[in-house]
Image 1 (cartoon, rainbow, N blue to C red):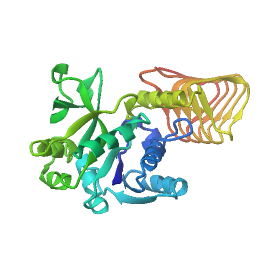
Image 2 (cartoon, rainbow, N blue to C red; image 1 turned 90 degrees about the vertical axis):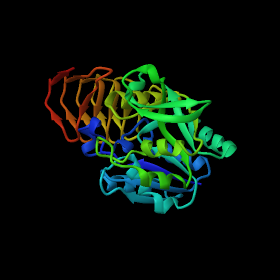
Image 3 (spheres, helix red, strand yellow; image 1 turned 60 degrees about the vertical axis):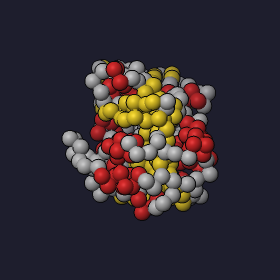
Image 4 (cartoon, one colour; image 1 turned 30 degrees about the vertical axis):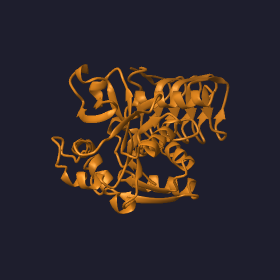
Length: 328
């Protein structure tokens, strides 16, 4: 078996951070989404991994080559962002006739989800879709099932009438998917959708839906990114991750990731936030519900407070003078 990771998205809803950092490489405690996926793929014994790249591809390639030299990784460029179906199709030459684990790299899964879906595939021998139940199914692709077999996928239905079992972005597929991807036409939003291919496939093949459990997060927005950060810290049994290179004066830090070469001045407070590499924070600065990009400079006595469901996002290389106040 091989693995295919889709890591080509632009991360529009996480801008301006994603102007300079792919969303798959934003730090979450001591890891990133991409590193978490690769680690779990390796633990399954899969050592051939394809990564589909597009936006800031050179950063993804450089990161993986430096950190994951022990596995065979092939980088596959999606020339134009034409949807998940197109992204998977670009991996056809790499996958060939192999069965493969497919992962949307901007989703956070529990550590057990990867093994669970592979075990089901080993027992059932048919395509698998990872699902979970949510309270807001209208934001996702909803899976209609009969005895856990897929009937159809409905994208972002207007109400809960179709149930609350949704796609999570982890699948096990086989070579039959290529024929169905060839049948897909452009969707109304101008993309080739993997879900359209799976819907066609479900008319002729049994596809099993497997609940992958919790946590699961589609990490596409600032609030979901901070939630993913808190979950990873909780898994590690810590309230804060501070890189060993950080220069930290006395202050208070909760539910936060503080990255390489950050400096934090005296009596500053950081809550539910991610502070990225080489940012300098002055004295008596209060940061809450925020994502601060690389190489920022935050002056003394500044206050940056977002909302828990709408955090502040400060792009790389931002300079804020002393006494700046930004309160959402």
